[in-house]
Each structure stands twice: as structure tokens, then as C-alpha cells.
Amino acid sequence: SYELTQPPSVSVSPGQTATITCAGDALPRRHAYWYQQKSGQAPVLVIFEDIKRPSGIPERFSGSSSGTVATLTISGAQVEDEGDYYCYSTDLSDNGLFGAGTYVTVL
Amino acid sequence: EVQLVESGGGLVQPGGSLRLSCAASGFTVSSNYMSWVRQAPGKGLEWVSVIYKSGTTYYADSVQGRFTISRDDSRNTVYLQMNSLRGGDTAVYFCARGPTGPYFDFWGQGTLVTVSS
Image 1: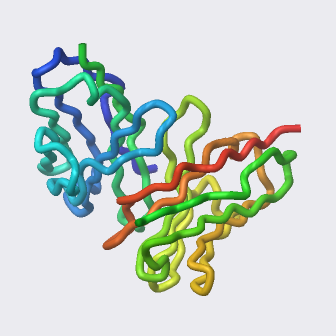
Image 2: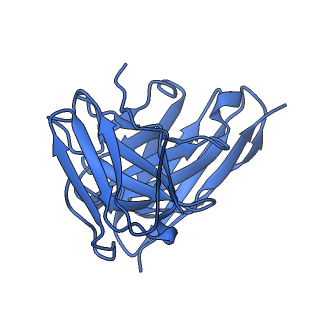
């Protein structure tokens, strides 16, 4: 079955750049979306349609996509950016799926 | 103000049924893609189902044939009918809105479903 593959964890120091990848065979034909989730809270959309940032999301969050890999970059990560990050997309039959999530540690 | 309020969660025995509701305000559900996403305790997010603006529905393989998504435009509410519940269905169930496609730009706070004897 189709999968989106993310690294389980990423660790950076404050002010450094955190990079999270999401690999999936259908990504050349389907958009990727990125969600931030902090403990006990509902997820928040941080990137949609591969590269777009919703209003209210800091500029340090950016997205890119090339071939079968989508990437979320946090430039100048802050302590408040710690949490789980999930990529989301649809397969070629329009069923949704999430990656397993990446925990970002900023310390 | 956009709001999504889920209700209907609770404790149910294996094999039982529940109907979750998602009451929307500040926008019209029939003009959006409305989805259910769940998260088992300590686990990641799992997409469950979506209903398109057209009324077309899609389901995850894990719930296909057991769950049904629907909406009541007069009540501006989306539902998830869950039958033949199993322990693996235990999770917080989130309702979410997709304004231009089957993704999620706004989420409710979730309702907990526990399947246990």
C-alpha cells in the first residue's frame, strides 16, 4: 500500500535550520501538506499545496517539493517550534494518508 | 468566527456503534471538503474519511464498510456513523475542513472514542 515516509526525529539548536523530508511515489502528481501538532492540541496547517504558507504562520516555515520528495524547512528554529510534524497527501485514488510524523526538538 | 465542535464520543463495547457529530459555524459545510481524522493514544494521525462538496465520499481501508460519513446541510453538521467497532478504533476523532480540496485548514478539538469491554 502507498506510504509517506518521514524521519522519526530531527534535532536542532535554536536559530539553526530544521529540515524534514516526506517521500512518496505519488508526490509528483499530488500536493503535500504539512501539519504541526503540539502535545494535547489539534494539528495546525503550516504549509499547503507544497509551498504555500497560510496567513498567521511565521515566514521561517517554508515548503518545497521535487520529484517524490516534499520538504518542510524551519529556518531559524525557535523553541516554540518543538512538536510533531506530519506530512499529508492523497494517493492516486484520492484516499488521504499521513506520514508517521517527525518530532522536532529545538534545544 | 470559524468553529468546529465534535460530539458523540464515549465508551462503547466491541461490536457496538456510535455516531459522531461535527457542528460547524462561521462557514458552510456543503461548500467545503469535510473530513474525519483520528489519532490513537500516543500514535500519529490517521485519515479516516472525507465528503466532497459534491457529496462523493472516500474511506480509509481500515474503516471501509463499517463507517459512513454524511452531512446535514440544514444543520450545517457532518456525521460519522461508526458500526462494528473494534479496539483498534479507539482514538480521538477530529473533524476538519478543507476549503479548496481534501486537505485540512481548520480542525475541531476532537472527541474521544474508547472501544473496550
